[in-house]
Image (cartoon, rainbow, N blue to C red; front, top):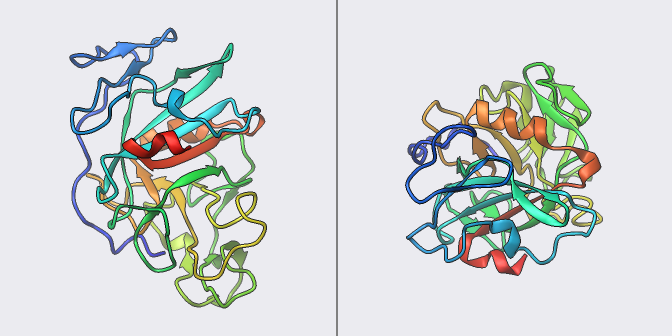
Length: 256
């Protein structure tokens, strides 16, 4: 899905950096990270949102929770947690994020700017127009003719391709998406291991990437962060920890 055309508003408020003073009502984890206080607009138990998750694989030791108020929102928070001695421990404060311009959806389809709900893996390769910022995954620096195939009629639908020919459909010229694709991770929606083979028209190209504008903007279905926050998350993710990313309205987190 195209990202650069969706310049639809500003990001949510300021972040409490790790190590800084917490906002009123916030607490700190044992590791010193600030934990966001209760969201008065509808999140009943936010003290540790990872504790509400029930379907994560037993081997998962890192989880990213991207959640917002209801299905219609384009604003979200992104929080990271790691399992320490059997308990989920916050790693970062809640980071302001943006999602699709049409909010969350339980039934995402190609060409509609919703962010698909569910539990996903992190793709086996991270990508970026700029050099590797120090991620723990294999990293591919994008070059001319690097595409994400978003053509439902193509046998290579929802995969990375290096080709001099546009794959068609909604396919993205990844090397041209500045600054959104300075660095990004693939969220494995409609691709292995979530499905054996991408389902035509079910949606493609769902990434964790950088804001397209300095202030932040809604996306075509991806999750976006400021550059500094994105790099912090991407360099923390460790394939050895079998990380998962959960996308959901706050009130639906218990499903996952």
